[in-house]
Picture 1 (cartoon, rainbow, N blue to C red):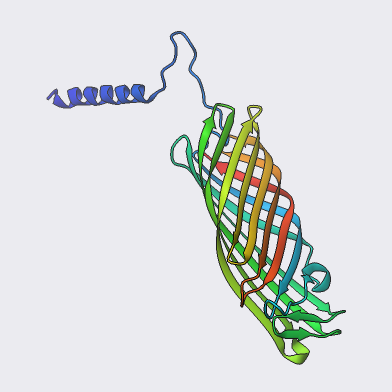
Picture 2 (tube, rainbow, N blue to C red):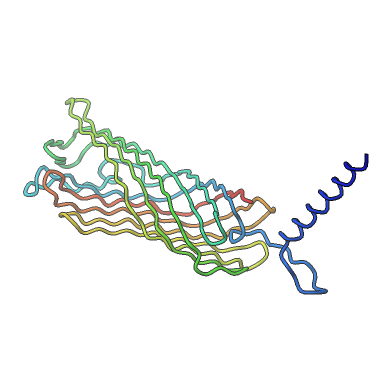
Length: 279
């Protein structure tokens, strides 16, 4: 009849021993240390970001390597918005103390409606002066990044790693009066080198920065991708932070590849506001 109470006491003792083993050791007569919530200690984070930024688009699509198309300023010539409000989301998982995976995604859609004041040649199509040209552009970018923190202290973390950004672009230009229409659709995976750092300079405030870069020079194609981000966040609650920052995303491609010659210079940059839930 005393078996159950005895087993219960043994189980409680074992649980207490396991809990004591899991707790970090501290010096005798010293108070226990408490971990300060910050991006350095977070094991998971979900971030929602709103950015109000400027956009610039310079593009050219050639009919052939010797028959160049018109260099187009998308905002001035096509009437595309040069200011945009866009949202993005990001996820971070810390697998161990020094190993992290992060994911981010954003989408940018713009429309243009302009009467041309010059002749525009796009590939084999020619758009005339006074043509009313309607333009639709849609860009989606999905990023995956792995970083290893080679420096990690209570207040500072610095890591480097590799990532890949998958960009998909869709576009169409149309002159309804002449039933003239051009479309394009392309997907490109781009690897990136990453440098990521955090400095918690007070109990609730931290500065965070990230640089991602990639460049290629091969097969008649010169291209680069640069993504810069910096922010200051305030840890309002244990699992919730708010912050303001600035980011810049730029793609540059100059291709002399036969059958696909042209140039694209695209950039979006500006201040942002975000909410970050984490634990």
